[in-house]
Every structure is written in C-alpha cells, then in structure tokens.
Image 1 (tube, rainbow, N blue to C red):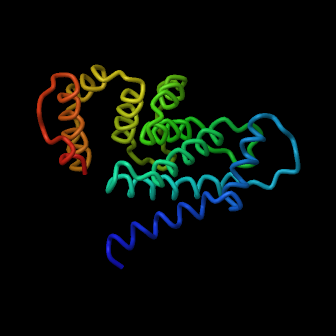
Image 2 (image 1 turned 45 degrees about the vertical axis):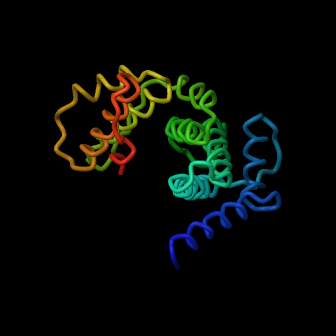
Length: 202
C-alpha cells in the first residue's frame, strides 16, 4: 500500500466512523444527552468513546499534516474535540478518567480544527495541569509540553516563550527538537523573524 492509498483508507475509515448510523455516533449522542442530565438506560461506553476518539484524532492529524484543507480531517478533529469535551464533563461515569486531560485534548482538537474560540474557552477554565506517575516515571518533560500547549491555546505566547527560554535542564533529544521548533515559531509570531519553522517541527 502506497502513501496515497493509505491516506484514502484513513479518509474512508473516518467517514464510516462518523456516519449517522454508526456505533460511535450512537455513543456520542448518548454521552451528550447524559452530560446534559438526561437519565435513561444508558448503553454508551466511556472506554469505547476514548479509544475511538484517540484513533479518530490521530488519523485526522495524519491527514491534516498532508493537506491543511482536508475537510474530512477537520471534521474528524472537530468530532474528536466534542467527544473529549463530553468525557471531560461527564458526571456519574462508569470508569474514572483524568477529566482535565480530556479537556486539554478537546481544546487542542478544537484549535487544530479551526475552532479557536472553543479551544480558548475550554483551556482557560483549566487550572495549571500536571501529569503524575504512580510508577516512578519522570513526567517532567511531558508537563513542560502540556504547559506550552495550554499557554498557546490561551494566547499567552510571550509567557510560553519566556518559559522555554529559561528552561535548560533537559538533555532529551526529542524535547530539544520540540523546544527548538517552538522557539522558532514564537520568534516568528512575536518578532516576525523569517524562518522555515514548520520544517523544524518533527
């Protein structure tokens, strides 16, 4: 399978997932009604919604990286954003999840889909978010990336740049690439420094 065939397959899968009669859409509608305090014999599954939204948002991002105007990808990200938002605001869930993390994902998907106002409103309601680990895994770099995402979504670009400028404790290659790309982008936004910042983003 070549790249074009793979991308077309992703488009077909996204369209099937979001067809009005699909299992996913049924679960989405039930979760939305439940979030709005409708009470009924629910059959929707939070874990199913989470896994499908993760696949949907990842696939949509792959398509969008090839074509920024891809309507199927934009719709996939928008629907993913709504799922993450509903999961983040769901009461009496059968499974306990990190709801603030869902809201960060929701804001990010809204932003990528072009719904910046939605993204800002969600991100702005969150307090400072920190990942934690129960297995002695160092998540400090993950938390820096999440902080950067939150600052960008809430339009605090100077603060985001300042935080990265003053961070020099990492020797992680992946993080250094992220930092380099983000700083080039910040310099383009704040100082209009011409650079091919997109080529720096892995």
